[in-house]
Picture 1 (cartoon, rainbow, N blue to C red):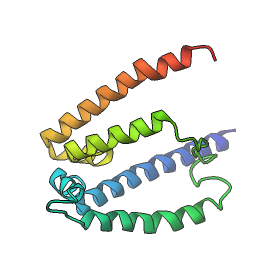
Picture 2: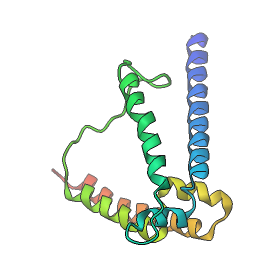
Picture 3: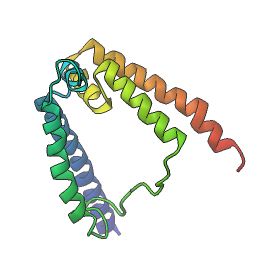
Length: 156
């Protein structure tokens, strides 16, 4: 019995370490690529002005790692540090998805941040990043209170 508890705790600690190191690597990549600099992001989005295409290289490099990675990882029966893969099952293109994508794009264009880089930029005490994260959290709470909770409690 104790052996199974030890193995489970051991697997859980490796899982936590993997999550921490993955997040650290992600933050390092965001910082090196300039994604935590809103001016660089807005320069990338300014197609008809002073366009900065360097973030296109970042996105391309990310795809070059992700696509083959998914190919090999999805051949496994289960993740290394979990019991099952959590993949989206819905393939529907609905109003919530389109509205969320539009809202994300507007926020990215106005602020020059998306959630990952904003959280990383908070470490620099950038006031814009702090305001973005506060507004993001408020939006998440409002979504939960106004949309997610009523949808869960309504009879279908």
